[in-house]
Length: 244
Image 1: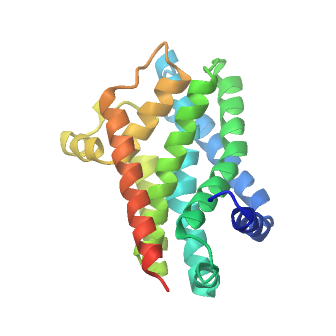
Image 2: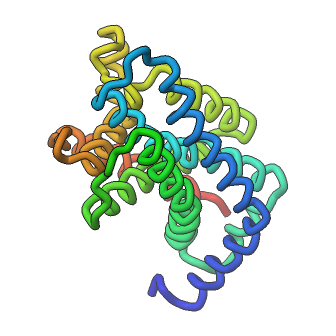
């Protein structure tokens, strides 16, 4: 069984090993939220309702992407450098447990940041978001997809390359991804690239979940997120399963 004593032992070990970093993660997520909600709004001369919704829903999306694409790969890269990652894999536990526990831990890490982002944006723009069980499920799915992709990057690449790629991805997320603005503003070639990548679809899913009266979640978004989540999970699982 997955939920045996080994599962809870591994979960406890992961939480305890990261307890010192939790306050830092919250600070980083808070700064990201403030930067997006307040900083990006300075770049928009006339902030209308649509732009406000983009920034409000963009803040939690960026947090989910930052955790999955940046903080997670850097954390795993550091643990691989120190040898703790390889040591953990020597435990007599199913490899699936490692992915499950990591996903749970990193999802937990995103919760304070998402709540703070929505509070800050709601106060700044005076917007009420739709925070219901469906929206929570969408946020979890987007977070899981981000974590699976980030985990795959972490285990497939050497630590130094994974860390460098995570920084490049973060720049792309903040500046060149249709998260805080419509995709129509991008050059056509970049629109095509984003149609294939998961970032735009993550933003569309979060936007549709938090503001369903203004945005819909299209079928292509569900398909893209499912495919990327599965690819990330499969690559991660096969890679750590080959490690001795």
